[in-house]
Image 1 (cartoon, rainbow, N blue to C red):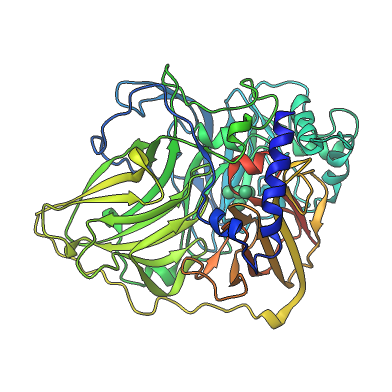
Image 2: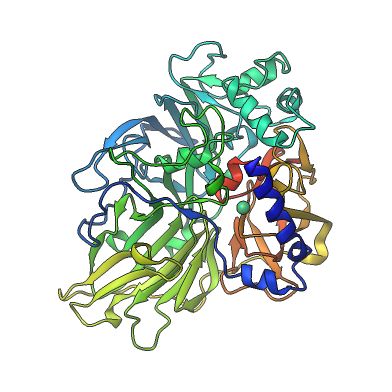
Length: 564
Ligand code: C2O
Ligand code: CU
Ligand code: CU
């Protein structure tokens, strides 16, 4: 009742501003300043900022390499980590750490990753930004059940190699609640209730069962893609929010010759930075306002419908860390792995002359030319590849990385201490980084429109429909280019699997200052319309389009598209 009323009010309030975002009524303009989420306060005293060193996740070594691929193994398991000094937090981890180990891939060389699930819950691994065949993409009901689970197919390894997804669709879509005020939620809950296994209730066939495996699953990444900062994370239907919140996220870097040929900072002067806000319960565990503590039913309590914000800012899993830097250029690969929090990153103090954050790349790799920013706004799942020249600061300067969208403790992120050590620096940021192909709007064979809105009856929706596995919202032809227009009620970071896209326009105007290059996630502010061009390449099958506010995603703001 409560939730229904709330949804209804939201839809009514926002309805006016949501039509295309071309004319912004006053309410919508006000909302444009509003950022999603609600703060969940920790029940433990928060540590002082800038006390712990910045961890850098270890790079995972392959277990073997052959002529065609490098092979890796990761065990997903519980680990008791010291995240807040003196406290133990039980995390869901890839390989015992949070973030998980960093995978480093070489463009053009396949990577095969075998995941073993020793967690107490099913999991799904998605390589975000990966150009990946459908059967390794981490479709949200392609579950990997924990070792020793019974009642499911037990074939380890690849769940089949057809790459076609029509087979799994039929069974997964059938048999869920409808004509109900929260039909989408009921559908998701129903899935979870049967162990998340499509077909378990007799609606699916053998093909569906093959998509669920027990114990181990092998994901194959051909890596026919350019250098970029990717990440991998859990993608289980209805439970991505709690899965990532509890630690299931890691970096996956792709390198290539084009990028290696540039004189960019490297080695110790290349730092991946995973930003993630979290909250902690009195016993040190991660606090998360799940509607069902046992996680049988997806979603969060009504107050957190618009996203969960933590009051502790973690960078690479450490609260407000510090790192000593040389008076030299550094490459910072910034990933926002937060469930719902947006950041406006800025250095304090700014170096004289400003333009401290020189963006060289985005989600999909290098930009054509660097863009110098005073501040960078980063939504959940986005990546910004930045070069900062700390020689612009006097030795001994304490430079804070600030989040101007935060307040109180969440306004600070981490600290760079500029060392007085004499150093040399032969790095540079060339004025031209690469040549990018520009997708041509005239080449788009279809225009499709996707409304990202809270619906009166069905939670968070795309085109008024809550997620239902197997129901395709679009069927683009393999190899074709399409124009996709997204519009919003409130903030939604919209993400596509399979291929990166290029932003064509924002509210009928030029793309924004954070929209450059190839992207796979684009942040829609309230009552905005964003057009992107995307070309569907190489792999047919079922992929996802969804909001990357993980609470929105879990509460049904997701859809399948089928490349055929
Ligand atoms: Cu980062 Cu479909 O997700
Ligand atoms: Cu993705
Ligand atoms: Cu959203």
